[in-house]
Amino acid sequence: MSARIELLGLTIDPLNLEQAVHQVLSWAAREDGAGCRYVVTPNVDHVVLLQQNAALRAAYETAGLILADGAPVIWASRLLGTPLPERVAGSDLVPALFEAADAKQPVSVFLLGAAPGVGDKAALAIQRRWPGVRVVGTYSPPLGFERDEAENRAILARVEAAQPDILVVGLGAPKQELWVHQHHRQIRAKAALCVGATIDFLAGEKSRAPAWMRELGLEWLHRLASEPRRLAARYARDAWVFPQLVARAWWHLPRAART
Ligand code: UDP
Image (cartoon, rainbow, N blue to C red; front, side, top):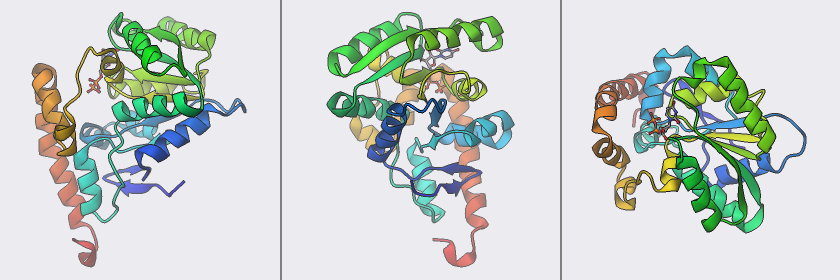
């Protein structure tokens, strides 16, 4: 695997979507009992949160794969002279992984997160579209579960009973990264993917931005329009802080490297 690049205080794996799929499938094929490796997908909001949040930084440090999700992260990588090949959003990684698994390497998955009933809806859609992907469990944890030790143990027991190759974790950021980091030694799956609203997308509960918006780096605008109350303050903060982080990093580049 190519060496990680350093960008804005975090390290990122310079992989494209196909390489990321290949990596996760190779973890899923292992029989060495080597524990659960996990994937995080930093977007602008994660980069901003990471500057202040030591627990999130620790979660990133142990991640098996760190993939850039978000056009501005890719733009920043180019401006700062450490170009990443392409954006690999969790919500693109999961369907691409299922597509590859369906074609060549059947996998079992457990869907953890999203509102009650959404995981089951997603499971039906997955079985219909990718028969090579077996959904062996779904669970929507109750509000505040992460602070409840008994509930955490119960979630881990559900996963252990289902024995999935891959745990798809859709609990929102940074909750999902913190939860997976805290419990990865006890998660009985070969890989865990921290992928936000992907379970909602698979179930058809939320819609992704159209392809033209994604290509122009405008997926955030679509999300803002669909959940303005939840996202407006977050995006305003990110729009203020992220350019400053990039500008500061650019300023600290050697003079000759400032493109
Ligand atoms: N979610 C959940 N439990 C929680 C908090 C969030 O299952 O305690 C789910 C929520 O239902 C949705 C997803 O997490 O499916 C949120 O993902 P999104 O990427 O929109 O969150 P963000 O990372 O942008 O906050």
